[in-house]
Length: 573
Image (cartoon, rainbow, N blue to C red):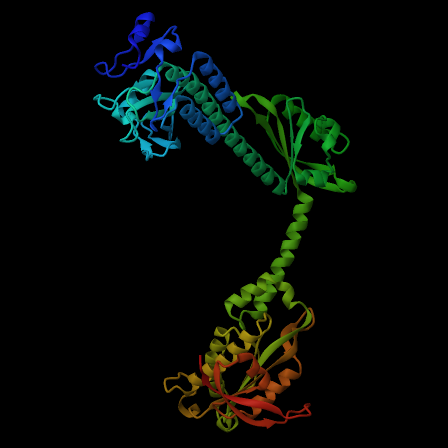
């Protein structure tokens, strides 16, 4: 038995018998600790003397002071388990907290543990001991494993005694504290009394900590909402001003501050004082009426003097601010700066016109994605020129002169257009810019109006090879019939040039000029039908991606030294 017979006869006992007398909750009104508590042994086999009443009070005060130092749940759980294990001399201590205290079916998860034994990570809410302490809000003491009930209170097979104490909030069970000891009949009245005094204190502080966390989270959400709301108001182009029930200014957004020259000192001042000398009496009367009756007024137009005396042509909507149960809390003034709107519309018209000019200028000569890039950067094609490093491409038909002799002009144009249709498609697919058609020749540029240097040269050479492949294909749809012997020679060079709009504001064309254009034209003139000729500068850009054949150097007009040239055979990789 846990208590000596003399002690049991000397005190008044109250027993709540549960499940056939196997669970006893013993409360003693007054007892001498020397009479009731005997020497006991803990799981290590060491003899320990239980606390006296004075020692118990001291320990309770000390442990309570440790709790009072903490305000977060993790630290409170640590103090609760560590102190109860130390003071009760238990072998195991574990705190299980409900995942959702508001739900009776919520499982209990291990929040903190003490002891060298393996413990379960969770406990079911319908476990026998948990269900009992949850329903009765009383502490359960189990004296021996041999009893048929509440064995779930023993967290390890080596444990034989247990205390299960509920951590109760006003309307929910926060969790349970479970203490285990290896000996049977280990726990005495002094230990039970400490647990029943200390655990409710810790439960209250844990509950307060949870409420504090909820309050902080709610405050965080409110602050985030306020920042979001302020961001929305600040980003508004309309001018926003609000008042309270007395008609004093409570808030204005950034646009209103900038354009109406409102300062922090205007907060709390009457609306009539802030705007009285800046708008006519008709507007002030409308504001006063809305402030008194709470009526909405829309489309009030007028003029107000803004920063530096600048007059603002505005349209004003006045709406009531309503609190709970429709209570009138003030008014909202939303002013649309019609002067700024007209200026903005004018700017938008200019931008749209610039984009239309770009599209009209390049849509037929560039791929769609390049045109879209130019539309986003219309300044890149302004009147004038920019220096660029680009690859210039000339392709001319060989045998055209003899072919065209004696032919009907309409037939010649049909042949040329069929070839141009194919060649232009390939050039655009390789992101080239078609500069112009010169009789039977095509001039194209890579690197204008948008530039990527090495990739531009690679794209240009790849394009030239594909054009030659299409011409040599027996399945081609152009150069057929009497034009079947026509071939194309292609020359190209990479170098600096000036690209831009040439002409006047009434008529201009985007084109390129420079010495590198002349070099490319010279190479095209020496390229035979089916050949692609490039310079050393282009070869340096394309690396080892193509198989090349070096040819004899050629003299170019305007150059002192001959230039090295190559014939492009095919693509390697």
